[in-house]
Image (cartoon, rainbow, N blue to C red; front, side, top):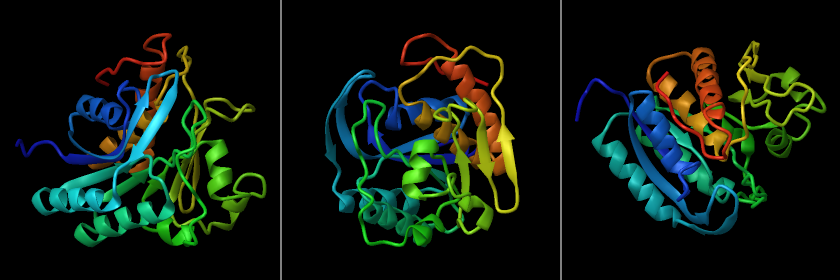
Length: 251
């Protein structure tokens, strides 16, 4: 294996349409010239228009897969996608941190599919802040952030500076400022404004954005640079055609 490319790992679902999940992540990784690995958390039956069924992968199998990769390779960054519960996520994070404390972790908290199928149960009696403290960046949309952290926007909880991770709040669901993403860092908030490109809705666009950020982090970009570069990448993807499955381009 070439040593010139950093290695990134996607831990996410398998979408046979290739628009989301590990297939979309792998396409994105390759365009960023990083070496992409993948571990699936779920098998699905779906198209870009319809979600039919899901089978979750046993957690012990996922943990064994993670251990195998980290014992054999230097993994620079990890993107985590759909998981069924906070317990499942917590075990994944603890395993990564034990094996490689410096590996950067991005979590795309996909709570529902674009076709409204609910993936994740948030009823676990676990401390979400403790889980988030093991993650470098999360990439929720406006609907997801209010489920994960009730009052984050409505009650301006971000002002209290108590969230133990960076947050890229995606603007696709913010009707007042569509396309304006906000990056919440420890002591700074950065607005990422959309370009003038004509963009179209895409199945799995959140997967593509988060995997682009992960690749950029592995390439030693700062969180701010990684998010800015990923926004450029996702806009090219969203503007690539008018269908729900986009084309990936080299930046």
